[in-house]
Length: 624
View 1 (cartoon, rainbow, N blue to C red):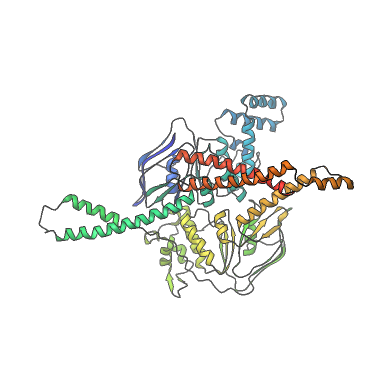
View 2 (view 1 turned 90 degrees about the vertical axis):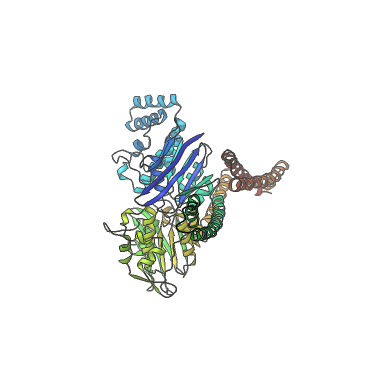
């Protein structure tokens, strides 16, 4: 069943063509992501689909009777309303009943509560209330009676996402849903959206999210839409094949064009019998021969200033706000080339720690010592700060007119802009006209122009396209200085960091040796061990020596338990094999949307069964 049809849609701004005559559809159960470089029209297409902008031509049609739900990058709410009033704004009877019940509880009026309770009971809306509270809790949208005007920007974005998920539209349309979510929220949302009954169309740069949630990728490249039936890994593999085929076809057209041009030149000028059809064909061949087959990539060719032996030392650093301790006795001495990621829930104090290191925030206790040779390059969440009517070239030249490169020669600010994918026709464009991703790329250029040897990056991946992220990852991997990164992009963290600062309760910060994926594995093992320990503590204990002997005897597996243990090993092996086969089916051979959906549903069942059997295997393995 088709939920959304986009037919022959085109959009241009002035002389710039964003896309032309693109066509695609979203069917029930389909989870589609749109990927493209910054400034090529992703957000414009999302705005057209959501009705916030109009196409120059073509049509966007939703199936009659279905309800679409949109998550904008900049959601707007009534600041005078509470979180409760905002999140339960909707037309469904269940939503209205739960809202009335919550309001009745606040009044304390027994009669009002009884009437509201009976209404919720009659509509069987308790499941809806439980789900709504779970979503609100997971996304940390603030207290239910808190005014929207008191929320932070991140909380407002999460409130919009919570409202959308609670409303349960037939089709979810999400623009960068993982921005402003911490890592635990992203993993929860990833699992939530993977459910088979959800239909989804989204824009995101989160590559793990793309890989684990989506079963189709749409790529907008040079104004043309390319479709890939599979997840992100499948997209990468097949995109490479497409680019190779395009290069071969372009080269073939270049050879053909040379032959046709020779034919045209050989014809007498006065001859009126030249084949008009053949001349028209030459124009078509010329167009195909001129297509770009190699991607332009930003070039990070800056010189790092020398870093001395004394870099940055944190001595028992403490940070308090009133009675809340954000950082509690952090000690660390940075070594050359060290790359540390910082993770923790929103509001834990990650950005505050960065500001203390930069000297923008005072410590409450301890001290921070910075080496004389350290040159910080700070990339903050707020992004580029530019003057009104400031142009792209001016944002660069106010830092430096010429920049030294690794090859030993200077390049002009204009040349550097071109290397950063800002062509000459954009140099005198006002910065306010740039897309969000283009502004972030310009800001990154400003930071690197200062030739830092210690990079501090606070959410650097927000709004950057995947191509720029890949190049930035390559640059940071080769960077000889120190790097501190706060990011919710797990793929980015895994590629760059050697160790983590993990914010924990009470402001304590754990130094974990490894990247994010290794930390998650370790944390899950620790969690399972704690559960097993809790179970053993709550189980009845015997006090006599005779009983202790019996307990020791009981620790050996019974005949039936041994059989179960052996059976579990085989079943886990079979499930792992099926999981691998399903992954292959979804990423390589998924050309049928219906089969892809079935495989996705089965994948969820297999993962759930694996987790259950692995937990039981761990319990029995204690006594095997």
